[in-house]
Image (cartoon, rainbow, N blue to C red; front, side, top):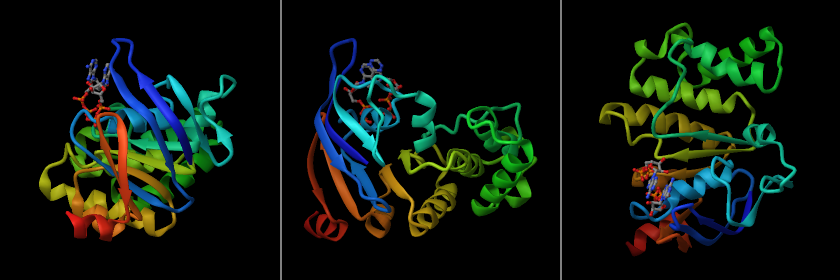
Length: 227
Ligand code: ADP
Ligand code: ADP
């Protein structure tokens, strides 16, 4: 993923991103930290085009997300995203949530979507919860369903926007463990988080944002040793 000189000016004039450039290699895990309001969430949202950009370009695996001709469904396939709030469909089971995009967007057959969905729920430790509705799952379980749902599109890169911030403390570990195993599997990841233990353990690089700019990047051991 190569983001080059990404600029974002919101309609209200807020200049949220100022020429942000970031290259993430295949299999790399980059953690973004920085104060509230520094543009971390805006940057992640531009990376899957939830937010249009005012300037610059974003290329994932040779595919230009920001070209005028780009089909937004292709972007959703390439770039998976997990939010602070899980946003599961309440009237669908865990498996139903995970199968939805493969069926509707990718037009996979029901048996294939179901098999892949079950495999993914198994992978995030929810083999025994597939038929539960979100209201019968804990926050940590719901977030793991949300991760499985994003993975169901077989994305090239996964974005995480404060994935554990809305969770009770005792559920943070189970979500971070799923993210760690994804990283170990070689998934390319960009993670906004306050979990410094995760950053130290899993990140290949830590990037710091301030007032809409990427001010420095470090390998984690150098970052934590200088802090
Ligand atoms: P962070 O994720 O680092 O807390 P954000 O990306 O949420 O930062 O916000 C960066 C800046 O952009 C802030 O000044 C925020 O108020 C502003 N901002 C975020 N979303 C919007 C929006 N939808 N409209 C206008 N300004 C926004
Ligand atoms: P976060 O930092 O987790 O994105 P915020 O509280 O900054 O959370 O923002 C919550 C929502 O409000 C986001 O959807 C963001 O885009 C929007 N928002 C933030 N700042 C502004 C703003 N100045 N004007 C309009 N919307 C904003």
